[in-house]
Structures are given as C-alpha cells and as structure tokens.
Length: 193
Image 1 (cartoon, one colour):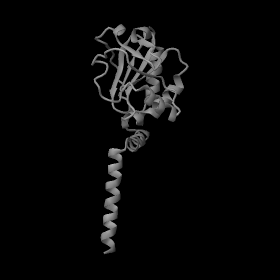
Image 2 (cartoon, rainbow, N blue to C red):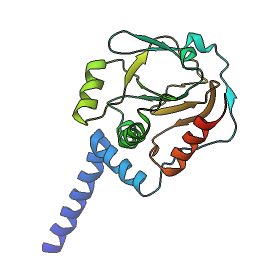
Image 3 (cartoon, rainbow, N blue to C red):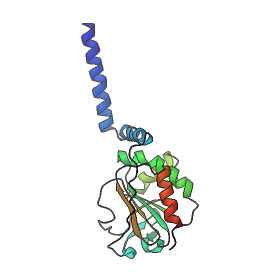
C-alpha cells in the first residue's frame, strides 16, 4: 500500500510542476532562462543584410511621455529593437540578458535601444522594469510596422546597421549578453557609414 502512495505522490508532483510551467509565466520564464544559460536560445546572426522595403521615416515609436522617435532619425546608429510584452514568458526570460547587454552599451552614442511594449501599456511595462531594476527605454508603436520588420511574434528582436539595413531579425527568446552577440554588435558599430 505504501508503494502505491509513493507512485501517486510522485505523479501528482510531476503533474503539478508541468502545470505550473504551463500556466505561470514567471515559472516558464525561469525555465527558459536556465536553458539560455546552458547555451540554448542563441541569437541567429546572419552575414547577409537586407534593406527594409518600407520608408524608414514612416516607422515611428513613442515613449510614455508621448515623444515620438522615427527610425529615419536613427540612421548612422546601430539600432536594437525588441518587441515584447509583460505577459510573454520568453520575453521575460530574455530580459536579463538584454539588460546586461544594455548596461554594457547604454552610454554608447552609436547604439540605440528601443524596447517596444507590444501591449502599449506603459504603466504595466514600467512597473515590470522598475520591479526588476532595469533601466531599459520602453516605447510602443507610433505608426504601422511593416511585416518585414515585425510579424507579430513575441519576442522579436531586430538589429539595424548604420545604413538602416536589417542585420538580425530573430523571433523567440535569445541570450543577447553572449560574447558572440556582443562581438556582432561591436562589428556593426565599427563599420564605416
């Protein structure tokens, strides 16, 4: 009889763990973070660059104060765009690595960070950033975004080089504090205009 209870308790514990991972975003984010730390979920860095098929001046984002920034204004800079939401476990999982990456380059005038809250809920997004002690700049959509830049999957990260060409367009969580990604960003930064 005792052996039967042990089997049932183990099954209940396993089912409980699976349910927590499935239905608690923070638990799922923690699991994904652990997998990122062991080397899974690396950003896919491609050598080819592609021009956006949209006019950069039409792609705009706004911050909590209503200030609008256009991608056209950022030509000549490396732009790191991350589309995310507070309810998205993979987004939350990659946020510590993005914050580490940001802390390394936050004072570099040639690199711009735009964390795009897909929900447009500035108070909720800022509360998350404050709770985690992240200083990442939060924006939301200020115009329509072409599908070549953002198809709607969260998280999506796009890196534009100084000429406004897409150097990376990745969907899903990734470790943006990896040495490989930092080297990639430094190479983009060092390219002549």
